[in-house]
Amino acid sequence: MIKTIFVPASGSSTDASVFATALALARPLEAHLRLHHVHLSACAAAVHAPHVEFCQGVAESPIHSTVRGLTHESRDTARNRRPGL
Image 1 (spheres, rainbow, N blue to C red):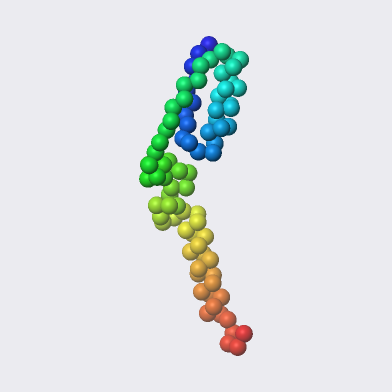
Image 2 (image 1 turned 90 degrees about the vertical axis):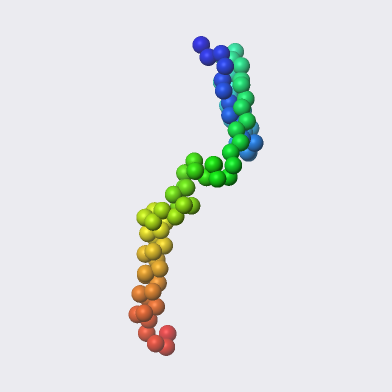
């Protein structure tokens, strides 16, 4: 039987829903909540972000290839434009 539930908190706007969910789970089990404040620097948090590859500039991310394709397309369009239009 679960007696203690570890609940991380970061001070963000999601904490309230995390606490509510933990409390809803703890009540029927008569478990204790152990709250732990987690603080990461911006750099440390960025490493664990889902889009960190984009932030770090990975050469072949989907966004890079899309931007590259749009850049080439706009250059081709500009070159093929008829004078006077």
